[in-house]
Image (cartoon, rainbow, N blue to C red; front, side, top):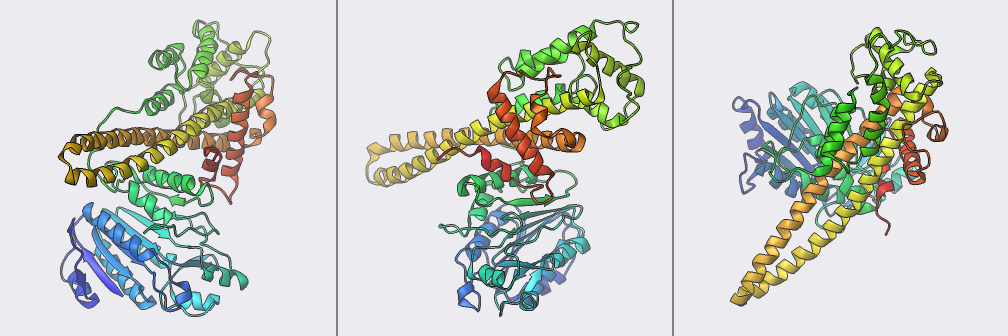
Amino acid sequence: MTLRTVRNSAPAFPVVALVLTLLLLLAGPVLAKERVALLIGNSRYDNSALSLKNPANDVAAMAQKLAALGFVVISAQDASRTDMDRALGAFERQLKGAELGLFFYAGHGSQAGGENFLLATDFQGTTSAAVKQYSLTLGRVRDAFAKAKPDAGIVILDACRDNPLAITLEQTGKPVGLARAKSATGLLVAYATDPGNVAFEGTGNNSIFTTALLKHINEPGLDVRLMFGRVRQDVVLRTRGAQVPWVEESLIGEYSMNPSMASGGREAMIARDIEMWRSVSGETTPQAYQAYLDAFPSGMFRDFAAQRIARLSYSANLTQEDKPLKVAELDVTSDTSKIAAALGILGFAPQSRSAPDIEELELAAAAYRASLGKDAALTQDNLFADASRLLLYLGGNVGKQIQVDIAALSSIDQTLIVARDAYEELEQVAAGDESAKPILEQARADIAAIERAQTEVLAQLDQERAYYEELMEQANANFPDYMVERTIGIAVTRSAPVDDEKLASRAKLFLKHVNQAADAETQGSYQWLSDFLPQS
């Protein structure tokens, strides 16, 4: 095993003996607010049947990327159990007082008794006892972060490769893949695939997961949550949903792998559309929704904005004396927080996490009842069903845009591959033909334009995924009993056009994803993204 330490964008990776490295780490105080990474890649196992092609390549590529981003990088390749323990100890000491710590493991992994084990190269046998003897546990890694107390920690496990070990352990009754583990405060844990499944090695120099990670890790100013969202999206697209990376996170604050200012360029229209809708959706005046329509006359939420204007216009013109202080059909003091959430979703009360004011809530309920019509009854069931249905239609609307943009991204990615291949051929031609250089410059400009389009679509998808998940969380937090197909077709609501079959169909797909998000087995997964893949 070799252990390397690289500081602050050094272009080369000098090999340092383990003992000397440990002495250097112990020699003096660590610089405050450092960014530190430990990378372990196990390719050559003593049992040759378990050997893998890509982990060593993954670590080398990650080391180069992270060093360029200013990380102090400690890397260990083909490490025994003893080597892994020593490397983790060195990492823990270097991590004290750091701003950000990152642990990356590529190789074989397994689980036993709910614990995750990262297999060392001297692994022997097929039993649970052997796994425990020749592995570094995820619990030990988490303990290192807990003791060192960096501002934030990231653990990335590109393990569970599809391999003979997984088959052998399965035959002994042990589950394949890693177990789900809750993230501690200040820690993000990213898995190459969802719990209990295997990850693909890939046909190139790096695994499918690490390839996606390398693609997005140095995006300027991109929060790590969004970065891993893009990584998951790439892997789902490339594997057609066969591999879905998993993330557990409890980070406090925002962190970027590349904290420099985000790159310039035109702000994506969809991103601004969603952002403005978020800002106005908690407003209770027609003017707020009209402002949205003025800014986005063809926006994703134009129908919903128009409906809210119609609902609110009548109640906005009522005087305080005209508004009843009590709503006989609805007791707002019963299940107050849920009623406040429903009225907030429907636009009649501000969306707030603080305890609602009862009198304001009664006025909001009265305004909502007035918008339903003179003879309409306002029951708690009708209110909750109406709010639930609106969430379902909003989710369906956002889902449609996700599908459109994923198809666009897939097309752009393919175009970029072709353009880059063509550029390489032109480079060879231009090396011997001066007249080809203007064509080469145009090809370079074409690639830059394609990359800008790719960046815009990625930014749009970041916003869409986040808002889609936000709507799912609202649905499950407030109205789990109404997350059934019957809710979409109920007649007592005006939250969306009831005769729009396509919208209803998209709402049903969103309902499916809401229920997946409520399931403990699939909660937090990006499996829902597979439903938006382009048809092959």
